Length: 213
Image 1 (cartoon, rainbow, N blue to C red):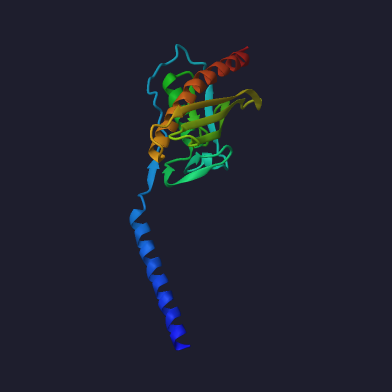
Image 2 (image 1 turned 90 degrees about the vertical axis):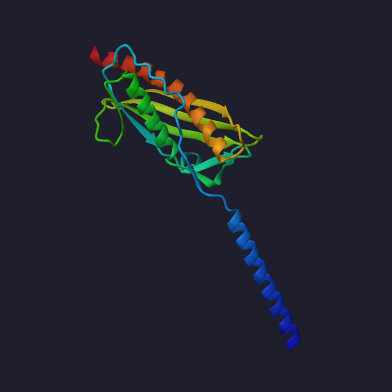
């Protein structure tokens, strides 16, 4: 009985030491946490000839999906998502895309004023932004960045929907890692904004004419 007890104790000690060694090795191999920021690659400023005279507020619509979270999402299978373990966004995509859109529209002077909703600025037009997809498609290495958003332009006075449209863009990922995915998602976001900005200005123009008649 004593010999059997010593054998069990020795085995337990070996397991404990083995577990301790493995834990130390994993700790040494753990990468540092990285935080990325979505960037607008198109910095060109092309002001319009004349403002439409409307005041626009942009309202991001936060989604519950991992695509619109602080996590940097990727997918290896259709309709599946996972998050990079050691990489996050500095802000959730819907909020950052909304700010990038405000910056673009303000630089073009197409509206009398442009601001994010909730900043205490009144507006007669409201643009809602929903992020449908925002992830690294890693089904084939190195993969591609996939961005899709839905925009809704609303007349705040009449509470009527003026226009709704979905915008999609993809960009190749150069390196199959978080940094490569973040860079490609910035490029795809820029392409979406390139289409969204003229759409907002065009759809707002008829609304401006209707209210002045």
